[in-house]
Length: 178
Image (tube, rainbow, N blue to C red; front, side, top):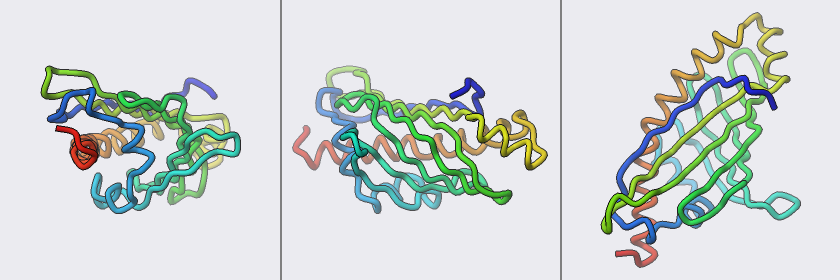
């Protein structure tokens, strides 16, 4: 992987429960597809959870980001109650054709006080060599691709973050958190 960053954004929202009542990993790996769709309509299309062949947890998300249909196959590098770091070599179907980008999705909560916590949804996408070759083949520069991806990804993340926070809170309350 290269350090050719295409986009990066991080947004936060308040969850009205203490951080010790939140389990992001449990929420993420049991998230129903319809709930995922409610977390960023109309961009979110489907979600599911599975395992890699070597036993690592995986979250599969299908979403529209800008003009691209993105199929993310996130593998958990960290899957803890207050922090999940997910890494995907994501398939992107753009009007010009198909390629792949690397996406790191970092979900975390930190205490604000004894009644609330701050949820942060951070996303960084980068261009692997195959994406750089795809750009060249289609007469685009990485700067052009990065500008488009930054705008679309930041807009998407700003809309999904508060809805993810609300969903995480609902899940915690459904699991008995008060």
